[in-house]
Image 1: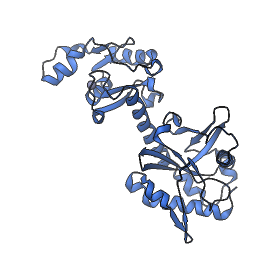
Image 2 (image 1 turned 90 degrees about the vertical axis):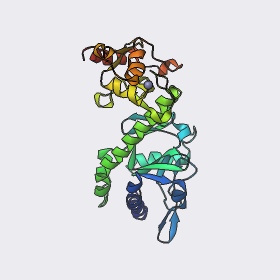
Image 3 (image 1 turned 60 degrees about the vertical axis):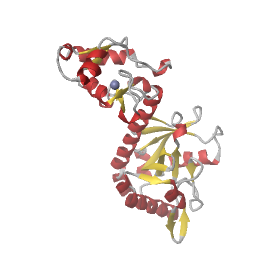
Image 4 (image 1 turned 120 degrees about the horizontal axis):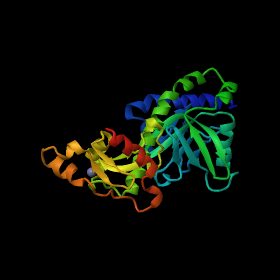
Length: 298
Ligand SMILES: [Zn+2]
């Protein structure tokens, strides 16, 4: 259990975030975060150069954890709102790692900052450390606390924190989708797998098996597709066979329309998907097969 002064400060920080971040889509500047929050006339910094941050006003537990873009592969979403967070270094007993482990044991709510671009961070809180894997040097972070622990430590205020969990989930899901797009586009070197268009701003990371049907956030469940081909794939206008052949639906092939239909859709019929070089990033054949069957029966 956290001492009452630290606990009050933690809740005051959450209130402050609640006042200033939703209007900015939960995005904050490094400058504002490192300048900190004023509490009882003192500056409390919310983010530090290190990933796991404990300002001096807190005695036992950190206030925030941060993922930076470079560590995108290290800090990865393992579910819609569950994140795997790397230890600081490889020393299991480094004080920062011990701090997070203690936060897990006492269900202490934390802030998760996710760097979107240099100097900008998306904030999600409260998040909880719910797992620790010393052999992998990773913690598991979730919007949901371990219920049992939370009940044990229930003070008067946490009900408000608890109610916020839906908003937290939403932010994490958005981050998860954002990071899925980043990883998929990177694997495909920023081009559409069907037409090779290279305009990043016109590219999406399409799911082969959708999130809603239990599709995983792995690159091999994704396809980098331009907006038109993404929509055409989702609408079963275009299908992809398990051996990576693009097929345009029969009725569409006979339609007569402008250049987009002719060059953009009909002419890619029976061509091959352009895939990432790395084998494990290529679309999983069994997942393509599930989607292909749906396309054939459309
Ligand atoms: Zn395309």
